[in-house]
Structure formats: C-alpha cells, structure tokens
Image (tube, rainbow, N blue to C red; front, side):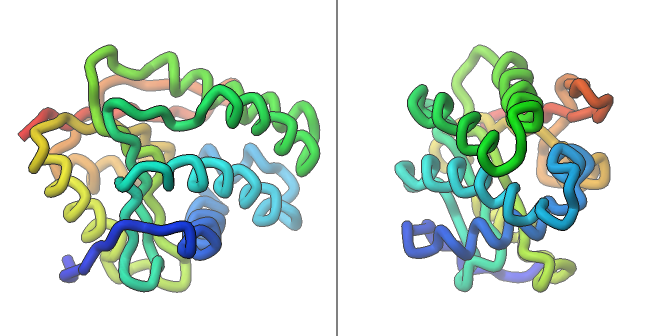
Length: 198
C-alpha cells in the first residue's frame, strides 16, 4: 500500500472529486445500471455525486489524495448525509437529468440505505472512489487506511455500504465485517459493513 499524504478536501476540490466518483462508479453493480443510458450516464451520475459531495464538505471529514485522484467521504456521528432540504431537492434534480422513474428508483435506494443504519453513533463512509485514470495504484485503500486512523484516534466505530462484492475482502482486510444485506428493487445485493471502535 503506498504512502498517501491525505488532506482534508476543500470546496476547490469539488469538481475533481465529482469526476473521480463519476468514473469510479460508472460500472458499479448498483450505481451503474441505475442510470441506464450509458451515453448519458456520466453526466447524469455527476448530478447525484455533486449533491452528496457538496453536502459532505460542511464537515472536515472528506479526505482526498494530494491531487484529489481518490476521495473518501465520511459523515461524522453527529452529522447528516443530506439535509432535509437537500434530500427534497435531489429527486427533482435527478428527474430533470434523467426521468422521474429513474430519480425515484435512486431515491428509493437511498431510503433503503438509511433504514438499515445502526442505531448507535458511527462514522459513515458514504463514498470511496478513485478516478479510473489512477486505478490500480492502491490510492483508494491507502486513503481509507489514513481515514480509519483518524476515526480510530477519536475512538469511534465505522460503517459503510458496499455496492460491489469485489470490494468486500478489501474492507475486511482493514477491520470491517459484514453486518447485513440490502436487496435493491432491481435485485442488486448491497452489503452493510461494521468496524468497531479501536
């Protein structure tokens, strides 16, 4: 695993983070097919990622590699992924970018994720991704390791949803274990994972 000098993201990193996530999740088992038009998928998905990243930047817990090639979006225990206003606005934005049915399907996945959250406080890894131009260098896992060191320093547990089965072993290798499964309306299986406080 490379040595990564992680830094806290700033609003100036927004475009680079959205670009990284748009490429990283283009073929994701959940976030790929939810935008069925592959020719428009990148532009449509970027609408969603921009809302989530913009919201998360209110907290000092979004970490990036020096050039924002990879990013890890964390929501602290006392935070929210989206405010109620952001949630209400997201479906409309997605509907305009895609279709009302697609927007509702995306929002439903978010509702399923929310319903599965543990009741105790935790740091929530909502998004972890590396731009495809930099994939295979270990940047994402190095960034995750640095993130978890910071979470461990405050003595808190961590939680995530893995939308890609290929990543389960990677998460297990840094202390996460499978907690539950969420099945989306289109049949994809999402694994929720928990890492106890250090």
